[in-house]
Length: 495
Image 1 (cartoon, rainbow, N blue to C red):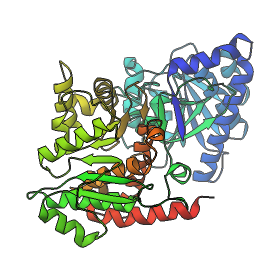
Image 2: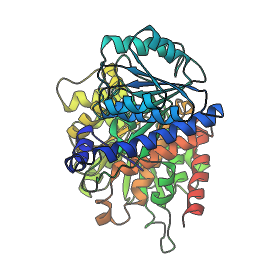
Image 3: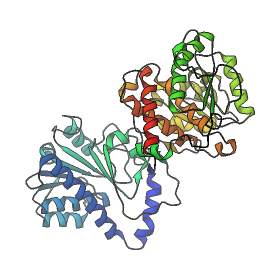
């Protein structure tokens, strides 16, 4: 799992080393790691380093120095390296090293733009941990003119490597300005900056390589957690030999209606495929029949459950309210989706996950706060508004979108990798609700233990698995079979 830290946290971790006079060793380590990645990329894409054209966009700080030292390394191996002095005050030792290796330095201007367009590799070393959106006009124009011709540069085979954080991206929030560098690869130092793992910054960063420079984050709470497929092997709740159907978890599901029976079928299928001791479905007879046809193990009588999932397919409001009352009275975890979200007018007195898309989050914030945003604002700043909703509701908010973000009430975020465009179809959210409900139930067999479960991290695993399954089907009804295969595979891979 990648852990992301704010710019302030990274600076605080660096300070003891800087106070101890360790600046030079830190920069040497960072520059060596950056140079190694650049060498590997050039060799992998172009077959060799010698004769390749490299441009370094060099800022005035340590980040620019790291880029210049990496440029010197490439120049010493035969690359033709030009550094663009962005602010007319480059890191002096870096400039000296570059020139000694045969590199050149150019000011901003037409020659710099021509060099950028012709480069095989561009190293973006303008800003580092302090990176923010909004750039000086001359720099903004240079980047725009350079990257206008294609998605990642003016040549299809050009490589762009950002140093620490791409220029124009906020290192802490991932927010991008009107102009930002779009990198193929970002080499970051000491720790992942939170902005590299969040919407906007993650897209700008491309692939990320972390270089260890000896920073200590042991007592620092990460701002962002980004689960990876390997985490599923370690963390997904799997059945144990001593378990039975009740200790594996019983989920109560309120989903589907005469108008939308398919949502109930999909939510039920998501829950069953994720691995569950028992599913209790509360739904109209037509939905029950459709679910039983596909999953005859489903129980359709009321009874005790260990978690609730409700809302997909516009189910009966009274039935959903009864489920919420039971959840609060018995401190059962609950996941609320779609129509269930409209019932929320206050924080619930139990562990809660809500799963709105941007439009539903607008309605939720409108009922819980004053001065709520519109949909465009939520889509422009999803993390900000997901955190705001989590704080107001005292619950975990899974804000669904092309890059789903999961917010805790304390302001920290879980950011799974984006799922494929295949998931942008009707019903995929219903399947996700079923998966989330199954995870709540399977981890809540012991209620005392259930209250210590990190719901946001659990939701991150669900979103991650859902996204992986989406790569192998084109429609929602194809998801459950793939999910079942993936869960079985996790059991085989766990030591």
